[in-house]
Image (tube, rainbow, N blue to C red; front, side, top):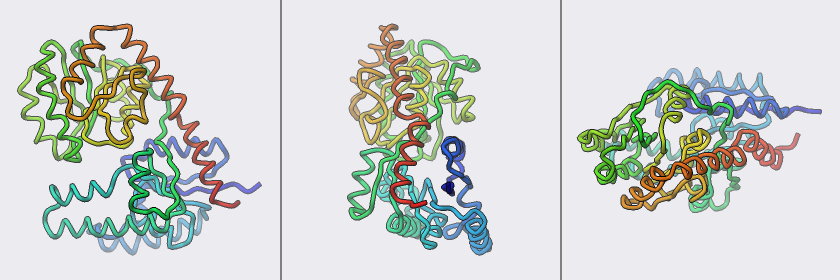
Length: 355
Protein backbone atom coordinates (compact mmCIF):
# COMPACT_ATOMS: atom_id res chain seq x y z
CA UNK A 1 0.00 0.00 0.00
CA UNK A 2 1.40 3.39 -1.01
CA UNK A 3 1.81 5.95 1.78
CA UNK A 4 0.66 9.52 1.23
CA UNK A 5 3.42 12.09 1.69
CA UNK A 6 2.40 15.57 2.86
CA UNK A 7 4.77 18.54 2.92
CA UNK A 8 3.66 21.18 5.45
CA UNK A 9 5.03 24.71 5.15
CA UNK A 10 4.18 26.92 8.12
CA UNK A 11 4.83 30.32 9.62
CA UNK A 12 7.16 30.36 12.67
CA UNK A 13 4.37 31.34 15.09
CA UNK A 14 2.29 28.30 14.08
CA UNK A 15 5.06 25.70 14.24
CA UNK A 16 3.93 24.38 17.65
CA UNK A 17 0.36 23.79 16.46
CA UNK A 18 1.22 22.34 13.07
CA UNK A 19 3.71 20.01 14.71
CA UNK A 20 0.71 18.56 16.59
CA UNK A 21 -1.15 18.40 13.27
CA UNK A 22 1.72 16.48 11.63
CA UNK A 23 2.07 14.09 14.58
CA UNK A 24 -1.62 13.21 14.42
CA UNK A 25 -1.46 12.67 10.65
CA UNK A 26 1.52 10.34 11.13
CA UNK A 27 -0.57 8.25 13.53
CA UNK A 28 -3.04 7.83 10.67
CA UNK A 29 -0.38 6.61 8.25
CA UNK A 30 0.54 9.85 6.46
CA UNK A 31 4.23 10.58 6.04
CA UNK A 32 4.68 14.25 6.93
CA UNK A 33 7.51 16.72 6.66
CA UNK A 34 7.06 20.00 8.54
CA UNK A 35 9.21 23.02 7.63
CA UNK A 36 9.21 26.77 8.29
CA UNK A 37 8.18 28.12 4.88
CA UNK A 38 10.63 31.05 4.71
CA UNK A 39 13.57 28.86 5.77
CA UNK A 40 13.04 26.78 2.63
CA UNK A 41 11.81 29.33 0.12
CA UNK A 42 11.79 33.08 0.47
CA UNK A 43 11.56 35.92 -2.03
CA UNK A 44 10.20 39.42 -2.32
CA UNK A 45 9.48 41.30 -0.06
CA UNK A 46 12.42 39.78 1.86
CA UNK A 47 15.37 42.20 1.69
CA UNK A 48 17.93 39.38 1.58
CA UNK A 49 18.04 39.10 -2.19
CA UNK A 50 20.78 36.45 -2.22
CA UNK A 51 18.45 34.20 -0.22
CA UNK A 52 15.88 34.30 -3.01
CA UNK A 53 18.07 32.15 -5.24
CA UNK A 54 19.60 30.02 -2.48
CA UNK A 55 16.21 29.04 -1.09
CA UNK A 56 14.76 28.31 -4.52
CA UNK A 57 17.43 25.62 -4.92
CA UNK A 58 16.73 24.43 -1.39
CA UNK A 59 13.03 24.15 -2.16
CA UNK A 60 13.62 22.18 -5.37
CA UNK A 61 15.96 19.81 -3.54
CA UNK A 62 13.37 19.28 -0.80
CA UNK A 63 10.74 18.40 -3.41
CA UNK A 64 13.15 16.04 -5.16
CA UNK A 65 14.10 14.23 -1.94
CA UNK A 66 10.70 14.07 -0.22
CA UNK A 67 8.49 13.74 -3.35
CA UNK A 68 5.27 15.01 -1.71
CA UNK A 69 1.87 13.97 -2.97
CA UNK A 70 0.45 17.23 -1.64
CA UNK A 71 1.52 20.48 0.04
CA UNK A 72 -0.28 22.15 2.95
CA UNK A 73 0.49 25.80 3.81
CA UNK A 74 -0.90 27.97 6.59
CA UNK A 75 -0.30 31.27 4.80
CA UNK A 76 0.07 32.59 1.26
CA UNK A 77 3.80 32.91 0.49
CA UNK A 78 6.36 32.12 -2.19
CA UNK A 79 6.58 28.60 -0.71
CA UNK A 80 3.01 27.75 -1.66
CA UNK A 81 3.34 29.57 -4.97
CA UNK A 82 6.41 27.49 -5.88
CA UNK A 83 4.56 24.27 -5.04
CA UNK A 84 1.63 25.23 -7.25
CA UNK A 85 3.98 25.95 -10.18
CA UNK A 86 5.22 22.36 -9.92
CA UNK A 87 1.60 21.18 -10.22
CA UNK A 88 1.69 19.60 -6.74
CA UNK A 89 -1.79 19.59 -5.14
CA UNK A 90 -1.85 22.63 -2.86
CA UNK A 91 -4.06 23.08 0.20
CA UNK A 92 -4.09 26.63 1.57
CA UNK A 93 -5.24 26.96 5.18
CA UNK A 94 -6.68 30.46 5.44
CA UNK A 95 -6.62 31.88 8.98
CA UNK A 96 -7.75 35.46 8.46
CA UNK A 97 -9.69 37.92 6.33
CA UNK A 98 -6.61 39.04 4.41
CA UNK A 99 -8.64 41.36 2.17
CA UNK A 100 -10.00 43.48 5.02
CA UNK A 101 -6.63 43.31 6.79
CA UNK A 102 -4.87 44.68 3.68
CA UNK A 103 -7.29 47.61 3.48
CA UNK A 104 -6.77 48.42 7.17
CA UNK A 105 -2.99 48.08 6.86
CA UNK A 106 -2.87 50.62 4.02
CA UNK A 107 -4.92 53.04 6.11
CA UNK A 108 -2.75 52.70 9.23
CA UNK A 109 0.71 51.10 9.47
CA UNK A 110 1.45 50.92 5.73
CA UNK A 111 0.66 54.43 4.48
CA UNK A 112 3.96 55.12 2.73
CA UNK A 113 4.45 54.24 -0.94
CA UNK A 114 7.25 51.76 -0.18
CA UNK A 115 5.21 49.94 2.44
CA UNK A 116 2.13 49.90 0.22
CA UNK A 117 4.21 48.25 -2.50
CA UNK A 118 4.98 45.44 -0.07
CA UNK A 119 1.26 44.97 0.57
CA UNK A 120 0.64 44.96 -3.19
CA UNK A 121 3.21 42.21 -3.80
CA UNK A 122 1.85 40.14 -0.92
CA UNK A 123 -1.64 40.49 -2.38
CA UNK A 124 -0.38 39.27 -5.78
CA UNK A 125 1.34 36.25 -4.22
CA UNK A 126 -1.79 35.42 -2.22
CA UNK A 127 -3.99 35.76 -5.31
CA UNK A 128 -1.82 33.33 -7.28
CA UNK A 129 -1.72 30.87 -4.37
CA UNK A 130 -5.50 30.90 -4.15
CA UNK A 131 -6.05 30.65 -7.89
CA UNK A 132 -3.64 27.72 -8.22
CA UNK A 133 -4.77 25.90 -5.07
CA UNK A 134 -6.43 22.51 -5.12
CA UNK A 135 -8.63 23.69 -2.28
CA UNK A 136 -8.74 26.76 -0.03
CA UNK A 137 -9.31 25.73 3.59
CA UNK A 138 -10.89 28.64 5.54
CA UNK A 139 -10.88 28.14 9.30
CA UNK A 140 -14.55 28.99 9.78
CA UNK A 141 -17.84 29.36 7.87
CA UNK A 142 -17.68 33.14 8.17
CA UNK A 143 -14.33 33.15 6.36
CA UNK A 144 -15.53 30.71 3.71
CA UNK A 145 -18.16 33.26 2.69
CA UNK A 146 -15.38 35.85 2.32
CA UNK A 147 -13.38 33.48 0.11
CA UNK A 148 -16.38 32.88 -2.15
CA UNK A 149 -16.77 36.65 -2.64
CA UNK A 150 -13.23 36.88 -4.04
CA UNK A 151 -12.73 33.42 -5.60
CA UNK A 152 -16.18 32.06 -6.46
CA UNK A 153 -14.78 29.42 -8.83
CA UNK A 154 -12.28 27.93 -6.38
CA UNK A 155 -12.90 24.81 -4.30
CA UNK A 156 -13.26 25.46 -0.58
CA UNK A 157 -13.43 23.14 2.42
CA UNK A 158 -13.78 24.43 5.97
CA UNK A 159 -10.99 23.19 8.22
CA UNK A 160 -11.08 24.50 11.77
CA UNK A 161 -7.89 24.92 13.75
CA UNK A 162 -7.21 21.87 15.88
CA UNK A 163 -5.96 21.62 19.43
CA UNK A 164 -4.57 18.86 21.64
CA UNK A 165 -6.79 18.64 24.77
CA UNK A 166 -4.18 16.70 26.77
CA UNK A 167 -1.89 19.77 26.69
CA UNK A 168 -4.41 21.85 28.62
CA UNK A 169 -4.52 20.98 32.31
CA UNK A 170 -4.30 22.84 35.61
CA UNK A 171 -0.83 24.19 36.28
CA UNK A 172 0.01 26.42 39.23
CA UNK A 173 2.56 29.16 38.74
CA UNK A 174 0.98 32.62 38.54
CA UNK A 175 -0.40 34.42 41.56
CA UNK A 176 -3.36 36.54 40.52
CA UNK A 177 -5.78 38.52 42.64
CA UNK A 178 -9.34 37.23 42.80
CA UNK A 179 -11.99 37.56 41.56
CA UNK A 180 -10.48 38.23 38.16
CA UNK A 181 -11.17 38.33 34.46
CA UNK A 182 -8.44 37.35 32.01
CA UNK A 183 -8.00 38.54 28.44
CA UNK A 184 -5.55 37.01 25.96
CA UNK A 185 -5.41 38.88 22.67
CA UNK A 186 -2.89 40.80 20.60
CA UNK A 187 -3.34 44.33 19.31
CA UNK A 188 -1.98 43.70 15.82
CA UNK A 189 -5.06 44.86 13.91
CA UNK A 190 -6.75 48.16 14.71
CA UNK A 191 -10.31 46.88 14.27
CA UNK A 192 -9.63 44.10 16.79
CA UNK A 193 -7.92 46.34 19.33
CA UNK A 194 -10.41 49.22 19.23
CA UNK A 195 -13.10 47.08 20.85
CA UNK A 196 -11.04 47.20 24.06
CA UNK A 197 -12.08 50.85 24.33
CA UNK A 198 -15.29 49.67 26.03
CA UNK A 199 -13.26 48.34 28.98
CA UNK A 200 -13.06 51.57 31.06
CA UNK A 201 -16.83 51.43 31.68
CA UNK A 202 -16.46 47.80 32.71
CA UNK A 203 -13.52 48.52 35.02
CA UNK A 204 -15.55 51.24 36.71
CA UNK A 205 -18.45 48.83 37.23
CA UNK A 206 -16.23 46.27 39.02
CA UNK A 207 -13.72 48.16 41.20
CA UNK A 208 -13.03 45.03 43.28
CA UNK A 209 -12.47 42.72 40.30
CA UNK A 210 -9.03 42.50 38.68
CA UNK A 211 -8.71 42.51 34.90
CA UNK A 212 -5.52 41.07 33.40
CA UNK A 213 -4.54 41.55 29.76
CA UNK A 214 -2.03 39.20 28.12
CA UNK A 215 -0.87 40.27 24.67
CA UNK A 216 1.11 42.79 22.65
CA UNK A 217 1.11 44.51 19.28
CA UNK A 218 1.53 47.89 17.57
CA UNK A 219 -1.90 49.18 18.65
CA UNK A 220 -1.35 48.35 22.30
CA UNK A 221 -0.20 51.93 22.96
CA UNK A 222 -3.46 53.38 21.65
CA UNK A 223 -5.42 51.44 24.28
CA UNK A 224 -3.09 50.85 27.24
CA UNK A 225 -2.60 54.41 28.62
CA UNK A 226 -6.32 54.73 29.33
CA UNK A 227 -6.65 51.28 30.89
CA UNK A 228 -3.61 51.62 33.12
CA UNK A 229 -5.24 54.53 34.94
CA UNK A 230 -7.40 51.96 36.73
CA UNK A 231 -6.06 50.16 39.80
CA UNK A 232 -8.04 47.01 38.94
CA UNK A 233 -6.33 46.61 35.55
CA UNK A 234 -2.92 45.10 34.82
CA UNK A 235 -1.19 44.53 31.51
CA UNK A 236 1.00 41.42 31.65
CA UNK A 237 2.42 41.42 28.11
CA UNK A 238 3.36 38.31 26.19
CA UNK A 239 3.59 34.97 27.98
CA UNK A 240 5.69 31.96 27.04
CA UNK A 241 3.61 29.45 25.11
CA UNK A 242 2.16 27.09 26.15
CA UNK A 243 3.41 26.79 29.74
CA UNK A 244 2.85 30.34 31.01
CA UNK A 245 -0.40 30.68 29.07
CA UNK A 246 -1.58 27.46 30.72
CA UNK A 247 -0.67 28.86 34.14
CA UNK A 248 -2.54 32.08 33.40
CA UNK A 249 -5.67 30.25 32.27
CA UNK A 250 -5.44 28.01 35.34
CA UNK A 251 -5.67 31.04 37.63
CA UNK A 252 -8.34 33.27 36.09
CA UNK A 253 -12.02 33.01 37.00
CA UNK A 254 -13.51 34.18 33.69
CA UNK A 255 -12.02 34.44 30.20
CA UNK A 256 -13.10 37.40 28.06
CA UNK A 257 -12.37 37.97 24.38
CA UNK A 258 -13.25 41.59 23.56
CA UNK A 259 -12.48 42.03 19.89
CA UNK A 260 -13.78 43.93 16.90
CA UNK A 261 -13.19 41.02 14.53
CA UNK A 262 -11.66 37.55 14.80
CA UNK A 263 -11.86 34.34 12.82
CA UNK A 264 -10.78 31.40 14.96
CA UNK A 265 -8.85 32.47 18.07
CA UNK A 266 -7.14 29.47 19.65
CA UNK A 267 -7.21 31.15 23.07
CA UNK A 268 -10.99 30.73 23.08
CA UNK A 269 -10.56 26.97 22.64
CA UNK A 270 -7.74 26.88 25.20
CA UNK A 271 -9.80 28.72 27.82
CA UNK A 272 -12.69 26.29 27.37
CA UNK A 273 -10.33 23.31 27.68
CA UNK A 274 -9.17 24.85 30.96
CA UNK A 275 -12.82 24.76 32.09
CA UNK A 276 -13.23 28.53 32.21
CA UNK A 277 -16.55 30.19 31.36
CA UNK A 278 -15.99 32.45 28.37
CA UNK A 279 -17.47 35.77 27.29
CA UNK A 280 -16.74 36.78 23.69
CA UNK A 281 -17.81 39.33 21.11
CA UNK A 282 -20.27 37.98 18.56
CA UNK A 283 -18.13 38.65 15.47
CA UNK A 284 -16.42 36.67 12.70
CA UNK A 285 -15.96 32.98 13.42
CA UNK A 286 -16.23 33.29 17.21
CA UNK A 287 -19.84 31.96 17.46
CA UNK A 288 -18.64 28.74 15.80
CA UNK A 289 -16.07 28.10 18.56
CA UNK A 290 -18.40 28.15 21.56
CA UNK A 291 -21.99 27.48 22.53
CA UNK A 292 -23.86 30.55 23.70
CA UNK A 293 -25.42 30.13 27.16
CA UNK A 294 -23.78 26.69 27.48
CA UNK A 295 -20.00 27.20 27.47
CA UNK A 296 -20.21 30.95 27.96
CA UNK A 297 -21.88 34.10 26.65
CA UNK A 298 -21.76 35.95 23.35
CA UNK A 299 -22.10 39.73 23.56
CA UNK A 300 -22.72 42.22 20.78
CA UNK A 301 -19.93 44.47 19.56
CA UNK A 302 -19.69 47.73 21.53
CA UNK A 303 -22.25 46.66 24.15
CA UNK A 304 -20.39 47.27 27.41
CA UNK A 305 -23.64 47.01 29.39
CA UNK A 306 -24.12 43.45 28.17
CA UNK A 307 -20.51 42.66 29.08
CA UNK A 308 -21.05 44.04 32.57
CA UNK A 309 -24.24 41.99 32.92
CA UNK A 310 -22.57 38.74 31.83
CA UNK A 311 -19.56 39.22 34.11
CA UNK A 312 -21.90 39.94 37.00
CA UNK A 313 -23.98 36.84 36.22
CA UNK A 314 -20.91 34.61 36.39
CA UNK A 315 -19.33 36.24 39.44
CA UNK A 316 -22.59 35.85 41.35
CA UNK A 317 -23.09 32.21 40.40
CA UNK A 318 -20.22 29.81 41.08
CA UNK A 319 -22.34 26.86 39.96
CA UNK A 320 -22.86 28.44 36.53
CA UNK A 321 -19.12 29.11 36.28
CA UNK A 322 -18.40 25.45 36.92
CA UNK A 323 -21.14 24.06 34.64
CA UNK A 324 -20.08 26.31 31.75
CA UNK A 325 -16.46 25.34 32.35
CA UNK A 326 -17.26 21.63 32.22
CA UNK A 327 -19.43 22.17 29.15
CA UNK A 328 -16.67 24.11 27.44
CA UNK A 329 -14.07 21.37 27.78
CA UNK A 330 -16.49 18.74 26.53
CA UNK A 331 -17.52 20.92 23.56
CA UNK A 332 -13.92 21.51 22.42
CA UNK A 333 -12.91 17.86 22.89
CA UNK A 334 -15.85 16.73 20.75
CA UNK A 335 -15.39 19.27 17.95
CA UNK A 336 -11.84 20.62 17.73
CA UNK A 337 -9.38 17.98 18.92
CA UNK A 338 -6.60 17.18 16.46
CA UNK A 339 -8.00 13.66 16.27
CA UNK A 340 -11.19 15.07 14.73
CA UNK A 341 -9.55 17.78 12.61
CA UNK A 342 -6.97 15.45 11.05
CA UNK A 343 -9.71 12.96 10.17
CA UNK A 344 -11.56 15.71 8.36
CA UNK A 345 -8.41 16.87 6.54
CA UNK A 346 -7.71 13.32 5.38
CA UNK A 347 -11.21 13.09 3.92
CA UNK A 348 -10.64 16.41 2.15
CA UNK A 349 -7.19 15.48 0.83
CA UNK A 350 -8.22 12.01 -0.29
CA UNK A 351 -11.04 13.58 -2.26
CA UNK A 352 -8.53 15.43 -4.42
CA UNK A 353 -5.32 13.39 -4.33
CA UNK A 354 -5.10 9.98 -5.97
CA UNK A 355 -2.59 7.51 -4.54
